[in-house]
Image (tube, rainbow, N blue to C red; front, side):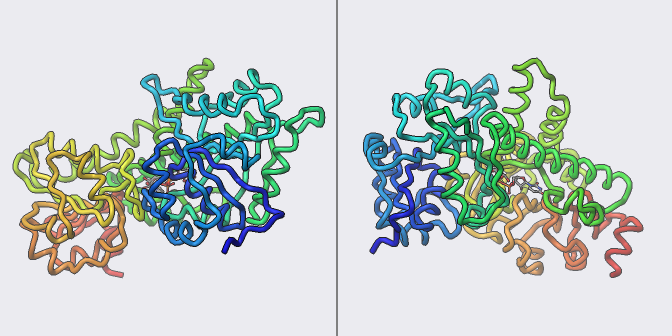
Length: 452
Ligand code: UDX
């Protein structure tokens, strides 16, 4: 039995990718009738059965629960007939020039035709100026920029409890599409986030600037970590001390082996490119990108420090392959660069990931992917924690110690308790933390931390 209510307008979603599916399913959960248009028939068939093609916690249950008021179709006409508010969630991948490929967005715009009845609500990340370019051709089109801030792995919770909802729209009374901004605000209002009503270009910029700022924060703490390694400080202590300043905040100060995923790398490049295309050289973003690339490669230096300069034939086990935990997404994952570099050095690479193995197998030729952590660690000269899956913190260190050839752990995400790992007989090296165990010479900082 459908739990929709008549006061809730039907919602259209164009594109059943990750953003589209989360948006569609969550609006269905809020009681809206939802029609999803997806051009791939196979996906439509799978979704209509209540099955998902992506890994996202809570989404499978919500999809099945709300399937009775969700329709999946390849037919744009059905969407236009049954809905007025249509969320555009098609992908906008980078082109060779670094600009976003807007061909799918343009196709959708042309499919809507000259309708003044419908509103296009842009969720796809697009360059600043896209909205005004679309409206140059279609003066009367009700167009709203409503950028997406969902994080993979917590997308359902993020959708249901947004920090803010950004709505960029033309509200001039004389504009025929001015109803759309208020309509979007009304459907998001039950969620309780702060409403940011603004113009279209500013809304587009809020998305790019937010992601670029967060990426900058990560590259900044990664550089602090690298300096900490030189001077014997511990970046986890430093980040804690910094983060308590409310102006800085404690989030996104976790040092590691670089950010990845479908958004940060793409959006930082897109903003840099956008600035460049308009004649502005965004110097800071060049450094953010370069620091991130170098950070992925620093693991190789750490391995060489302990195993010697020649990694030919050395067995290296990678724990975690996805770009972050709780997802099987491999896009721009640090594991891609790291495993190719290791293979380039002549090392033998084995790996384990709790959910990304299948996707990773196609992308990591020559890497032996195992179905449990101990199998990946068997006979290894070093283990590298690439993704901070919580279960790696629960590994039985004695079992790990006896299966590995050399007890060396490089913790690329500062997941483990270094002192406990060293006490179990390992050499332990994190990111921005003094090495512990074996012949590693603990600095004063490490020694005092270990003594606590
Ligand atoms: C991000 C944005 O957070 C989200 O608002 C946007 O809509 C899409 O992009 P997501 O890609 O799901 O979301 O991942 P996020 O959790 O933000 O992490 C991005 C990357 O940064 C990961 O590779 C993660 O490992 C890395 N990261 C994050 C760090 O290295 N350190 C941190 O402190 C935080």
